[in-house]
Length: 358
Image (cartoon, rainbow, N blue to C red; front, side, top):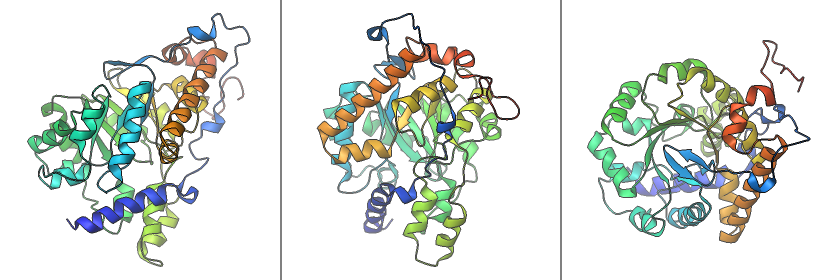
């Protein structure tokens, strides 16, 4: 691995991910979902609770910060800012790809996971590796990466479109299903499968339904689009940059991915929804559709770059918005909203309209 090139790529990813041109704005389909207003909720606002379980661990909120950055000199401070705020407010958090840790064989790197974990001992934290690396790594090597972070779960990210369009990409996915089966059976902690912005189809989710996964993070179309980012990084006029324009809207939407997961996955697998989530109201919509947990990426990073207080203020606003949505639908908890989703949101008909015409 060329470490200088690796670090430059990670910094490119941060810079390009903050550019609105690389967001699949409006494609999440969240704007088309309407919650039904309850004019006479039989509860007080201060009775509304965001508390929920995450992989068997009780947390104050159903929110998490999706893994975004690692492997460069600015990553530690970014992750530290996010981690301290998440621990304080009861959010879970994923870290960026730990490929560098895996391939360096345990050598001390820029990410300083031991130091980070020491500062947030009570944070529910997720390790993160790509499927291209997991296929070829032993369970012992992967466990070393997880243990270095003292992570409560391992996230395996699936990023096929990005790997194909990335100039330095490794689109080698043969053997991926067997690799996931092996890691699930041997690792000893929950395993989460995560897309990176292109979502999941029902057919793929049904293929995965027999695995003993802890959760699937759907990460649907609607937020940061890594095909667009890699197209911007590629040389002007290159085949990758041209293909990126062709595939600029490729993927399954966040909303359709959640609906597919509800149909395809067993109750034992948590449904995590991310991809274009911008508000607590968006989160409420996804909980009503069947998600157990809702993730943010770009908006959280923007807030974190503005400073620790700005991040905490942003997180508090999302929590308040979600509590407001719950109260105004008459639900005391996100679980209650999810369980009564058919009545409150309406079931889609074959024509794609819901029972309330929303």
